[in-house]
Amino acid sequence: MACTLPVLVRAAATTTPETATRPTGETSVTARTESPWNVVVWDDPVNLMSYVTYVFRSYFGYPQEKARALMLEVHHNGRSVVASGSLEEAETHTAALHGFGLWATFEQAGGH
Image 1 (tube, one colour):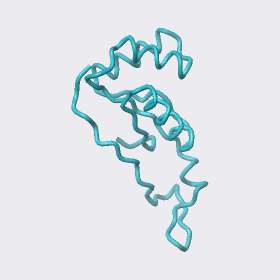
Image 2 (tube, helix red, strand yellow; image 1 turned 30 degrees about the vertical axis):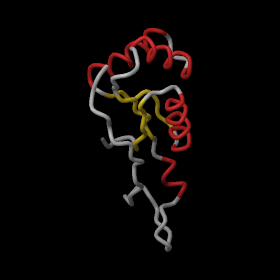
Image 3 (cartoon, helix red, strand yellow; image 1 turned 90 degrees about the vertical axis):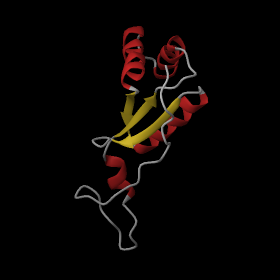
Image 4 (spheres, helix red, strand yellow; image 1 turned 180 degrees about the horizontal axis):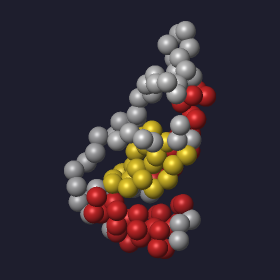
């Protein structure tokens, strides 16, 4: 599994019709967390395909078939959305995947 290293950048919150802005210019926490966030795993030249499958099975509890399909998507497409949920869940999953040595980021669903 080889590809170029993605730039790990946290998606910036922007004001859209779905988000509310406080007078101070901060984006409302409620509005930011209502939209789902995707956890993306990126292809890398280090981890074996069998290990990536193992991580998806052991961390997310995915069955072998789903874990393998996600791993193959990472391998062939360079990335795969492996989970989605609240911003806090996406941050937690991304940190956990980093702990396994995988390249992972999160992004707001609907944009990439």
